[in-house]
Length: 130
Image 1 (cartoon, rainbow, N blue to C red):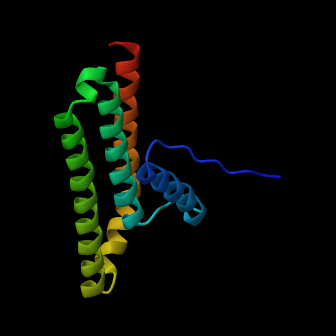
Image 2 (cartoon, helix red, strand yellow; image 1 turned 90 degrees about the horizontal axis):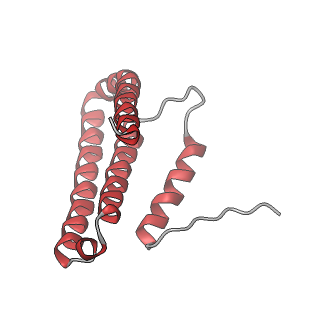
Image 3 (tube, rainbow, N blue to C red; image 1 turned 45 degrees about the vertical axis):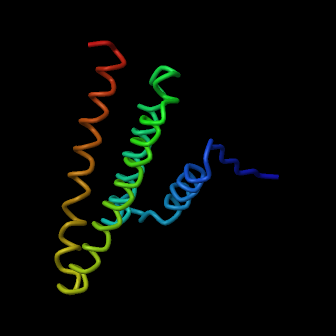
């Protein structure tokens, strides 16, 4: 029997994993995603980065209440910002009849790809130690 297993240290991270998995089923056949999905995925990446940075810190630093509070604030700021962007885009779409948001969606795919390529190069450089 097929199984689907998600593992995460917190409920919020588990929910994020499930949402990401569900989003893959909703992706358009041409590989494009909506502006809302792009913002949501970007927020998820930011939160993942916060988690990775916090986990990489030495134990005394990572367990410090200040670091935990700052990480939590980063999560909250990311959530609030992404919600504001999505809500703002919804308002723009409603006011313009969808013409502006559709334009952003068509241009956004190449911009998102370029950003990912740059990030990938930076990660490879840091892994290689250069």
